[in-house]
Length: 394
Ligand SMILES: Cc1ncc(COP(=O)(O)O)c(C=O)c1O
Image 1 (cartoon, rainbow, N blue to C red):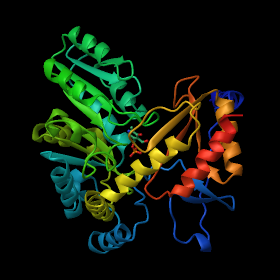
Image 2: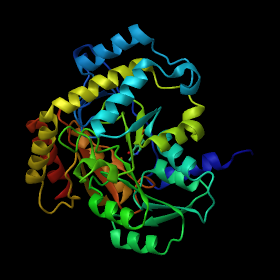
Image 3: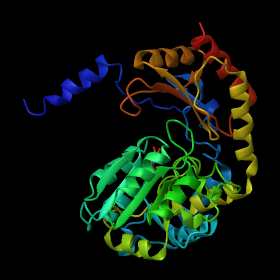
């Protein structure tokens, strides 16, 4: 039969405890004030520790109001791709806001972070052959970076996670004219940070560009939430920064910030940008409001730091957790079934904590990825730590 592999492969996922399913979040009258830290699934309320709404801005009144204003002024839909007639005043205003926030010359808005990543690697690696362009990616780079890089014509090398010595070695062996080092700022499944100053030095020494995927850093790291490049002596040391709006910024879409010439090049050659409808202008307008709140409300970043410290303090010292200065705290379990089992036990206590399994993470490193958000409170953290200790320290 045609496409037999479909049923075979789904059955294999089930037999390996890797089967994936969606859950539908419900609404109810007494849940009218929707928050991503309180969810209702199959009629039961849970405290959510698997949300990427790190700053607790989802459903913020001012952002919702800006969205309504945006709909009234520009309409909900862009109604064309950016190069036709889909580039509205709201998009320009959002690009300007991001450039000023990150101190970057130019910025381009994409429909998603996945699309921005694929666009960047495919476009930079489209003309030049394997020998003239080399991409160097951290082993733990997001699927969208890998897909973009491997589907380009450039040669792709991966270095062991945060192993800057290996990276330096790979670069010194490369004779390519065009070299790009790529890393996440905060790693999505581990929560640790890239060694940015070292990456910037290696890039400079080898005449390479540095590309940062700041999906999990934007809003959370830096004095005004500008992301991981804010730790560098100059933001230009990271040549290109990508971040999604779908996590701490709490809207949807993504941006790539870069210099004028790359901006021009992407507008002319990035297929994901050229042949796709621009994001909703109303959403762009709401995103500007979200960034304004992120810049001024330091208390949200402080709260993540305070609650994260409390969590580490309360967690039994025998539990293996990856050190993190972000919202993400990864507890490595190892086996898929065991991770699922702990996740199920926690559900019985009203805690939602999705087990992360291969292929999202390496085989043998299934984990519980706890995200601590500004909208959690101290008693949520107490409850979580208490039940994790019970489940993991029997
Ligand atoms: C590191 C990283 N990059 C890119 C993306 C993709 O962003 P988006 O959800 O906007 O497509 C994600 C989201 O899961 C991510 O974790």
